[in-house]
Image (tube, rainbow, N blue to C red; front, top):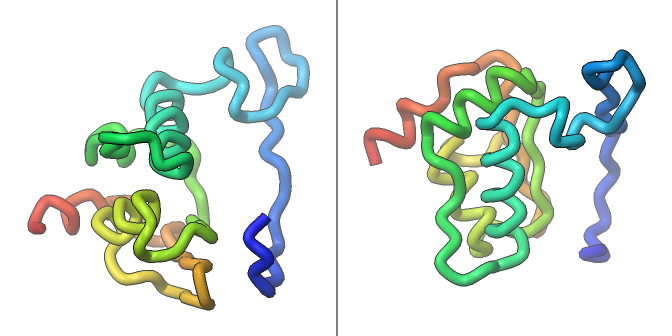
Length: 118
């Protein structure tokens, strides 16, 4: 979508729903409240919805703890609302290539305190 020349290895997130059927992990019945709030807030930032602030530190930390990602990536750039939020939350990106920013988060589950000191 951004015409950024970058190669990523990724995959779909598939989880069981309450009846045991395989569904995408963003299906509302499979997300915790903090995950749903985080997805909604992050999408608002990505779409540059006016006055979007992103999820609270506690909500983001809870969602990340449930998802247990190894990395977080965005191709929206450091100057975008989403990029600024992620930099405030995670700190300086581990990887940066043009507009693509990435953070390794698999080892550091408690990243929220870094944001509290700002």
